Length: 69
Image (cartoon, rainbow, N blue to C red; front, side, top):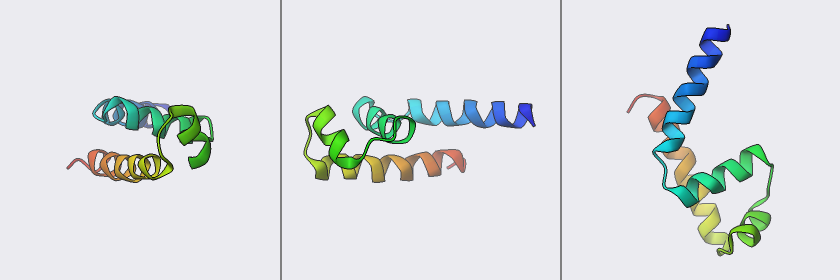
């Protein structure tokens, strides 16, 4: 189980590294720190629509990356 979890963590990290820096930071702040879209927009100094787009696109890219596409 530890080997599988470790491999999954490495795969996720590799896919995260493929994202552009700001969208990656946005996703990490949302999912690690639990920030809302409004909090992300305020912290990053970006419009809320931009933050929502970054999260949506980044999650899609992560999914495709993890599926091996």
